[in-house]
Length: 247
Length: 247
Image (cartoon, rainbow over all chains, first blue to last red; front, side, top):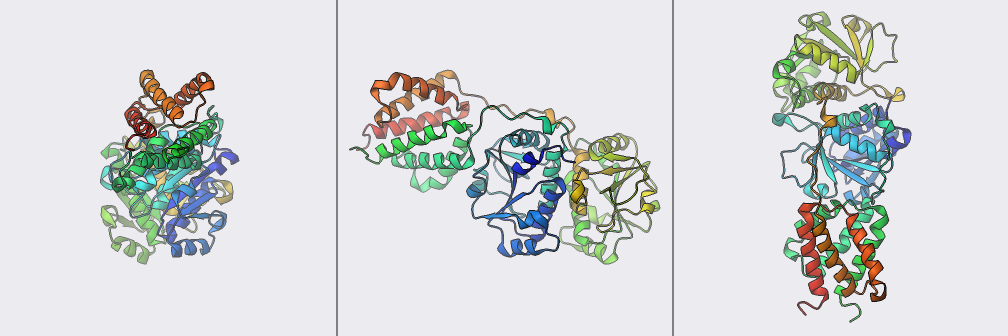
């Protein structure tokens, strides 16, 4: 039924961050199977919940093949687009926020050429600001203000439905410029942070919030994959010099 | 957020026929509340399940006001359009079958003038042929043939989302990200070039061609105007340090 090709379906990674309820993990996996997606990734789930969900009767292939990660960074490292989902209103947002219907179209475009990660936060708290700092932008399901927060399994089902809904999806063209993978962007971010420390730009006391700001700053650059090595080289050299190299 | 008026939202009756699982009844009610619908009707539910769902913490207004009926006939008596949902394939169909996106459009039209009933069957068997005999037509969520049957709560969430889904959302543009002016990009490029010299990254003999490479490199970043001052500040600081500042 899906309007996405098998390759496109296979390029989406559904990432559940700190999921607590085995029923929700199972429900997310079931919705993925219903709509033809297969790549489920969980980031430090409540262990018991993950084991329970996995051993549930008819858990199916999606859960059996689910991959476990200890950090968001690792879970999205192979993706060129990282999108967070949010119930909105519960925090100050530093990211562009897109309606589900429009955001899904951008995701389908990217799926035509490279892997995309779709993040869902814990049932209780959603995605933390640190989780969000790995996202290029956020997507919101149009729930009403008075009761915005959706059940995790239902939010996954609705988001995936929107992804396979668009009839013309299969015909979208890949983008000309291949974007850098999240893992490469992380390496560059790490070097930049080191340089900011070494140059005295950052204040150790506020390091944490600075780190998130810088992570968002670098993600707003739309770095092309072809340039990553050059930028890494530039900052390695600057860092070498900053730390007294050649003196 | 909804594209339906309060009157239209109030005209939809979500009818759960023979629901067996209190969690599913609760999930259906929650999705209704998320998307602004309030009229839940249950037809001979498994009593214990219904009581449990109702007494659940935070069951909310939708469940409290849920109406109970002993037959589909009574539950849909006040509606001018009765639509059944199905996973298809599991029985011979005697009704017109419509895709969710198209069916929802017809339902929205009817909601403009009179009440519509949307029927969901039991988790195990779906709607029986007798239930279906009260329906004008059937609607199907586009799940894949190999795994068509959805979780009840998720099916309700997806169907209701399609009903309130902004028809024009797909064409709505997000706030465009204002790109940096060429002059600002040049100032940044100049600072970067100085830093490359100071760090020994560039070789004076090939400076000219390097300069052009770096200029193209920086332009490929699509720098947002809002970030230009931050980047200028970062490189000024790095440069200051590279040229022995603070030593």
